[in-house]
Image 1 (cartoon, helix red, strand yellow):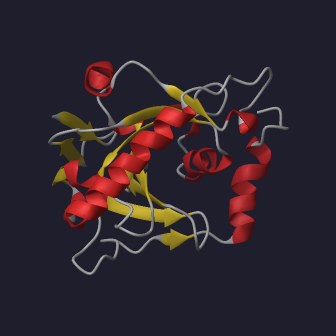
Image 2 (cartoon, helix red, strand yellow):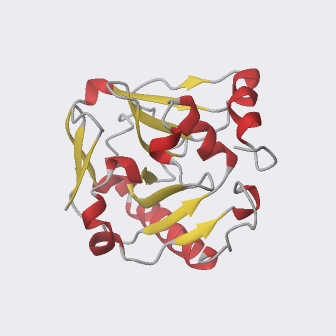
Image 3 (tube, one colour):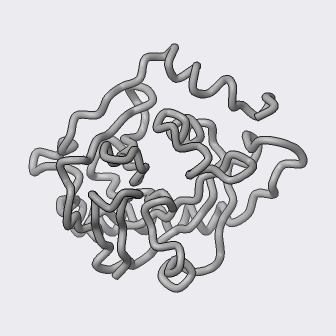
Length: 200
């Protein structure tokens, strides 16, 4: 079991088991834009603009308190659903728009930092380094392992039907809250000042 909560403690959840997981730092511009959308860049991002994420199957997540504070945003109409707590703007995690692709990438800010090595392993993959901030760029590592474990999570849960047990989607397969979809100009505003070519 791994405890999850937002920064102010109004939203609490647990991973009642973990199973196969991926632990990684993502330097993509979308993850960075999400942190800036919430006004939490200094809280979420490392000094190269990376976000540490743990990917697990959604059915392991149990929301214990504060479901009314859950909200979601999509950076574009086809973007991932990015969940957060409205009470304190803490990012929670990222999911695909379809519950059939049944993983969630939990953001480190809602996880128990002291238990992460024990629960998810100490090895951290590093991805999308071409859009990391500053130079020299971090070295990418662990991509093949991340892909293999990701496929395992998605395929086994699709075949078994466990994807239907996600707490973030209803019985019709729709997200429990309607995500806000950002306008293109707002996404540009969130990305451009913090691109790999900027002085951020």
